[in-house]
Image (cartoon, rainbow, N blue to C red; front, side, top):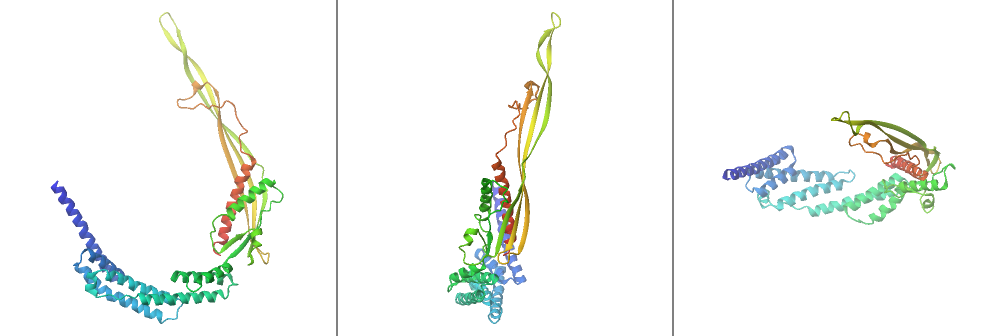
Length: 388
């Protein structure tokens, strides 16, 4: 038992030593690579567990001034440059300095090696204000050209970034909402045109499938909005595209029935008989059975067309035709003969006569193929407008 405990103690000690060596080595490697912030964080974490660790002390002592100088140098470059959104980059550097401050200020051992760190919270807040204002002015400039949808979309992005920097800075929320109205690509989708091929009930089912897929599903692109012909009338801004669907064809269901037959033959004992006064022998009789398996399929096929037009010019922008099919299958078995002829474990079907009139109603098939059309064109529209 004592040997077992000693072994465990040695194992734990080995793991601790290995972790210390790995941590210190990691801090030193980060220092050599010029990753001064990571070298500081790794060494500070090691000093929390081992305050007198020489390598960690040496690494943090060397890495700290190098990290501070690097960030201050970058800040000077950004503050004196003319590149767009320079204050966001300066803010990132101030935030990095404050992360170093947080780590050092919470470690007396680290402060003993590098001194009391400086907090740059005030400078970071100034940079944040300047960054937010810079983004705000970029949004206002883009919004001045809001009739251009791409400019309006850019304005939305600028004002959203403003809110990320400083929530509800000035009137950024209202500006973003105004820009968004002009950034939306509006698509009016007409009811499906059926070319008088469909019964009114079928047409209603088809339209319901399209409405379910196109208008009630979650939008995949916030800058694209679908309208019905009714909802488009209440929109003050113009539509961009017009989508027309036409149901071109619905073929009569194709029914197919195939059969497979299994034959079974077996000799079974039916009794005994005497062949002389003292000898009895078993009497066998050959029995047969047949299992017929019916496989039925019903296939419904149809064709639909989608065309996208420019709403103002009526120029055809895209056309796609989709052929869909839905297959319903069923199978059943019919038994004939003597059940004793069946193999061991073979189940005897309960049906003794074929039942062919077992398929769903025509509305069932039409509903299935309508859903397939709607799903296909939903993805087609998604692909068309995903980059808008």
